[in-house]
Image (tube, rainbow, N blue to C red; front, side):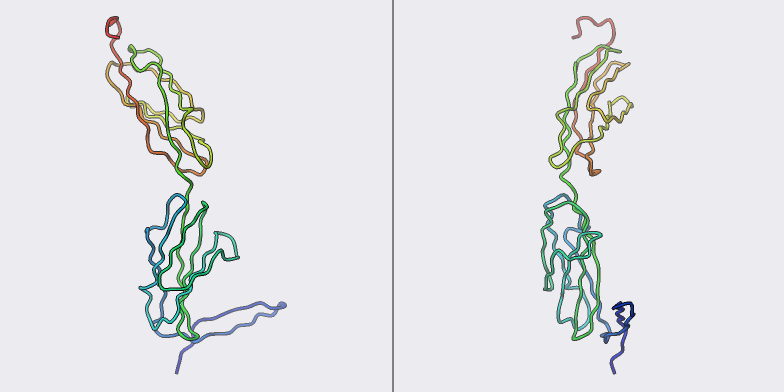
Length: 210
């Protein structure tokens, strides 16, 4: 005798109809993704693998939805499928495995991010006396699919700054060589790899040092 365990509820004309489908013992849907986690900048290609599903599976049905949308973007069939996501956003991926009229489901999430921004900056001057003002300009930083909204500065002497303007200034109180690092953030919350530049500071009174 087959047991019943998968319930389906439908609302038609205000009436609630409740039915059930036969559940196959041991039938279980399992999703594996590559990359894992399924996250990265677009275009992002994700391989979905349902081969670890258990039970007498006869069909693997994959359905992809954009987050908060009810209409599916695509439906695939097969034990393993590959999909390329060309737009940033979050997606839900469902695997339904079927054995006769029985089925089981699993869900995975895909996070497609924007292309990361690129940090770039100049300093004027790069060879200064102690206490002299250094001007930093990061207007050459860019984001291919959005805009840069935040600049995170590490001046190399223990001082930090966070600005929304691409220009800032800093003074170094001690002689030495300092590596300045800049990371920028775009309007999607993605961070750039750091850009670096060295500032050399010489002691006051060292008129011939420059």
